[in-house]
Image 1 (cartoon, rainbow, N blue to C red):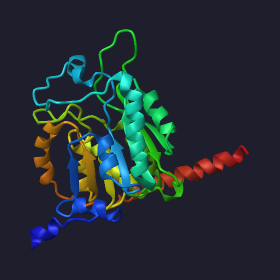
Image 2 (image 1 turned 180 degrees about the vertical axis):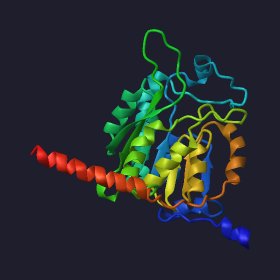
Image 3 (image 1 turned 90 degrees about the horizontal axis):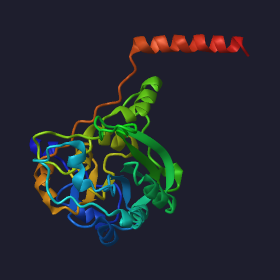
Length: 300
């Protein structure tokens, strides 16, 4: 009985009966198929709370091991890239479907490189979605260059479906103090976005779970339904399940089924309460603020 209570399933808070059927036995459902046709067929309008998407970049990603000098012994075969000539239509198609399935006020994060960023942005601007933030996230490796700067970063596009007033943003989910949560919101760019997990079986490009957890905590609540159209190494699914969300996703590479065994073992983590501000630091900050006000008033 104790074990059953520990692993108690959290049903989705909202969504149609069609979606709820996916979560009768477990809190996730993965379709090993194309996400564009899959979303058309499987997911009703206005039913998803949060989307986190890390699509193919249209840069011959199947050859990245030669660019980055990586040993890919533990990388699953079957990665599917999108040809550059097809990338605009591809972006418009999958983003259009995401816009359809997001509930009003729902959030979408898209992780993109810079090479075809303009095509992703064109697709977003041609949809009903609205921009919230354009973030930069760093990673600790990059292509060796001699005649240009090293661009070791990704673009994280934070958009939502109108109306904006219905959008979730849990400002105090990690820190209660004004200064602390401000720094936490600034610090998104300093989390290494990629994770290599040496020695472990993985998909071609693996996101850092810590990075994904932060996005989920700030922009969704327990019981919400998260969609990942390009599940890859299942990092987003694992993060969502540990944080008490329900997950739907698509992955065209059927070899990724081998990673699902680890997902089945995933247990919900105990959510840490938001951290209180350090009383000594808080006292110093209040003093600094009062001093600043005095100085500012002097020159008015």
